[in-house]
Length: 349
Image (cartoon, rainbow, N blue to C red):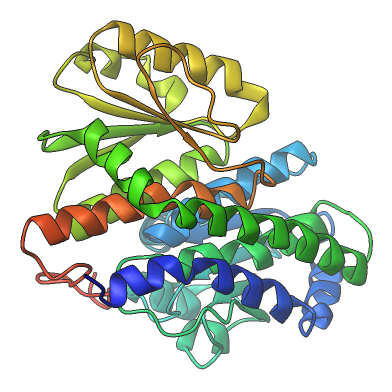
């Protein structure tokens, strides 16, 4: 069976490549960002999948010695605008550029605040209000976040490297293009094993109607996106937590009834993640472990996604769960990826 959602899942490698190629035409924006953002506070904001990408960007900026605040746009607009210092650089991410909260924010910022946006296309209210606007060129998308999520990361990687004080825009664009090419190749490999991968992930979940997904660093963004898509497309009660936070109370849920997935794509915390997966398996629950190389403790279902730059890794690590969401929708007799209560673009607060 094929449909828009499945087609969009399998088209993500190309979406990554388009987004990276588009940055070659947006070098002036990176130059302007470098001049604009020197020694200014940075706030990253978005809603839904776009906010999840913000978390990954903030984690990566921290490794470059740059402290960035992440806050979802509703919280920022209604409660925290007065906390923005004059000259703050607000990086707003929105796949559509039309979400209610982002549109409200664009009209509410102090004139001294600088707005930098990442959107799919530039003909939208958010991009039109920006001081600097970047285009992911993800293209049309009908179902839950797939290519629009993946395509956020190449421009975000370029922005992070620019804000982190790396070399000039041409060097940044070349580096991001090379890293994205690797990510796209890894994504194609994952998709090439779709049948076996979907069976493995479906076997992990079994007949359970809920799941928890955990990750650290940029892996948290993949876990967040996976939980979101499983809710949207499969109507599965999937929850995401930081892997460290999971030990602070939620660990009591562990056991045969809890399907747990651990996104272990961060090299620095790989051993901690594998230890958590092993512990969850020892407690009798089904555990899925997503790593670069596919290694897994006894009793844990492994999924290998290949070595990818940490900030691009969420685009690849989310694919197994997007495929699961599609398969569950098909088995459940639903139109995969079709929104029946909400909508693709949320225009109501």
